[in-house]
Length: 256
Image 1 (spheres, rainbow, N blue to C red):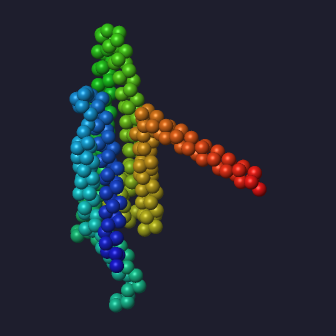
Image 2 (cartoon, rainbow, N blue to C red):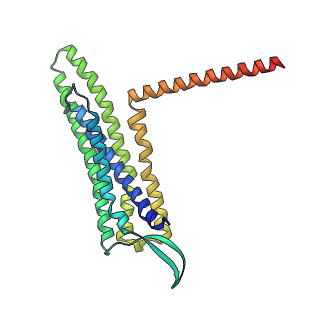
Image 3 (tube, one colour):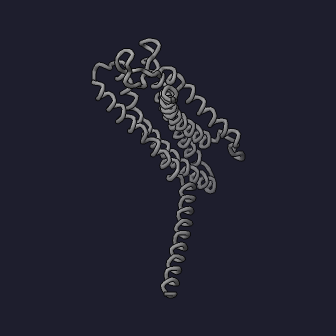
């Protein structure tokens, strides 16, 4: 009943997550650059409407770039004429070079452009911090201390951004290279090795989704403090619950 729908919908969602991951990392890098370089007014925090707009733009771009995927997915019947044993979901592009062209688009939009954004923002932040250090040497002592505190805070953020850039490149490069080889030189490997390679490369790529919460979450001092507060509160609640259970058991034993 839902065969054709799922055949088109599942790959579409999978493709969207690929673009979504890259777009989110790029948006975070640009936001970090704006904050460090003071491109945003210092007395105005980013508004909810702006956040919603950025999230909407990221999702829209990801969905648009993934739109060719369901168009190329179709159901193929397998078996003898007039006696089909089963159906399977396959890719069927309108012309022979379409798949290769789309793979190149994925490489550019999902890997090269985000990588360029990460490298560019990192270099701009590094340059800004170096200039700020030179200026602070000619300033008064209170000003120097304030600048040093800001530099230390931004240096830590830059370090996290650098690690995130490296993780992004390491995790997604194998998947993009393998996709190019599979589309332009499919005869160089068997179907079994092709599927196995895709699975391995995809697993490596998806590890970036687990490292990002650590990089942008746990390594952020404010978020880490909140997590520790929640942890301590949970421990307190669990401890109270255990004491009540022990007291209840003692009362039950004393009654007997």
